[in-house]
Length: 94
Image (tube, rainbow, N blue to C red):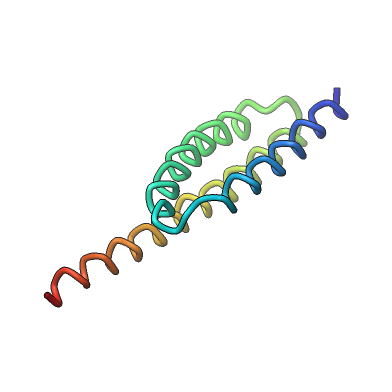
């Protein structure tokens, strides 16, 4: 079972990397917004895993997932906000 889950995880990393590298720069802001929504779902799942995890290992993994997903959400919002401010700045100069 562990080998199957590890294989799925590695394939997801590979597919995600291939998809992200093919995105044109004009779509990065909408893609970041979608990634933030998915990371928000990950935060909820990590909270559930940390709270009702089966054993201390599951709880520690839940806490680690919660920290990493929260960093991802906050970083995504900061990047999106910065990119949107760049577009607003161009409109004000005209």
